[in-house]
Image (tube, rainbow, N blue to C red; front, side, top):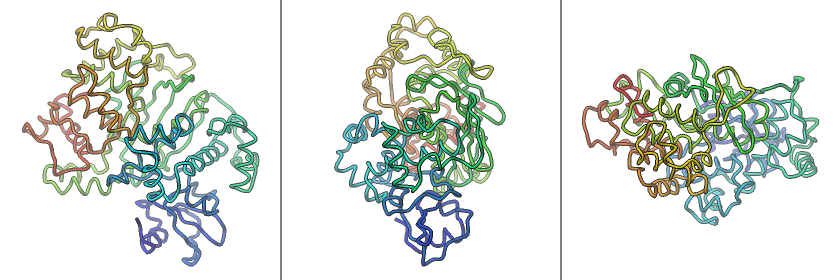
Length: 475
């Protein structure tokens, strides 16, 4: 936990390293801010510090209209309780309590609901239910300020089950009905809208973009010099997203039909683009090893590319076993062509959705093998699809133990695939696929597990892959 003097210093310096790690309640105005708020810094006597937005709101503070607390980065997990709390927080932000309830969330994270409540209260000063409620309200504020969606649609998109409850809660918590909280600029409804996502600290966008572009699937993804775009299926909505980089961080553009799913999509993109990583700590840790010192100095802030779709990443990982990036991409594009559904009303170059788990489960191994893979590999792909379609394959960020266990049950899934998916789909910052040939070539030796670089070995793997890119990397 941060002490008061550290928090005061971060406020006075508007230190971006602490953005999102705590919030500042201002007694004279009744609002709470991020420590980087551009408004005049409040007097020390008027400041109080809160570990989360939910804790600040529970104390009666309203969110600042200038620094926009809903845009703050999340917490990077380090020790075990913090890692559990951060994983739960991310799942709650993605709407887990609305979809499954607290017991199911705790079970997915491998703990009891009582323990989860205790950890969340200790870490964030608020219960899971309070955090979910604040998340819904802040998501609504974002939609009110950054889109032209009708208030009714915003209510349901934010996770409220009735317009009456939405109006009452907004007025009770923020002192005004939703119609009075619209952004200052008039907006027109269109085919897409854009929201900004703040990263923790400086963000090196180029390495992330290069990783994704090298693996971009024709028809599903478009990687360019400045942006990455792809098709997305979320629930019953099929659309597209584009991610670029601006002065305030990542710019996420979505087709308007994905607006009802903005809250989980934002949480998903934050995880996939590693926006909440504590890169100062990660880089300092890696730079302490002579193997990585020069890499860190030359290129600071290289983050771990996560997964926008855990099932898709699992299928691509299996297709990438023992082949190059280009070979895996060719096989996956054949899979998309054979089983992916077409997408209309998308930017040029985006034509298909990645095959759904249900589609591959119904196809069977023999049909899958026709893309050019051995029958055994096709059987593994089919088993993956069946497990995902049946709800037996938890590949959400934070479900590290459950995800690893489920993957180990599938024939054809070995240690490399499990570590790779733990790193990218499950969000384990310490996952390390030690048997990867590209990592072995980059290090120049076999059998190295980099135990001394715990708990950030996933970041070491990404740096080694970048170093050995010319030698061929896994997909």
